[in-house]
Length: 179
Image (cartoon, rainbow, N blue to C red):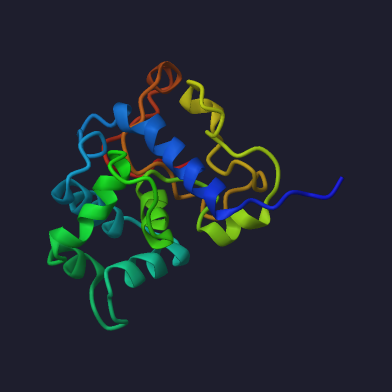
């Protein structure tokens, strides 16, 4: 049987499913209330963390950051009106959005594999796309990819709390957990 390639629509569904899965566990409320200001705050928090090269390129493209400019400063002064489409998409006010917005959301919810080019290359089950309630630990940090994360320093951006995490003291507030 030929291997199925993941489509952009499947990527959008998987990223949105990951958002729906983690938003209620974000104690800051920034994800659960995706206003333009909250999205900018999440982007600032993400941009001060150690991001992968793909994430940096997405941020530079979305926020129109030149090579000699500081990403954090550019995000801080970014026009809030330009972030409204992200909130509208996350609040289900719009059914579809631009691929760059999906890429930005994927960073904010630490969806893997990302960006879409990496997601496209894998086949098989799409994490979080079953339409059922799933435990957070069922979604591997590198679901669908190889077993070794490319950047072992990278972990979730938002606070994800479930019983297993509480038992293992494996939680933090807006920091990336070491794997």
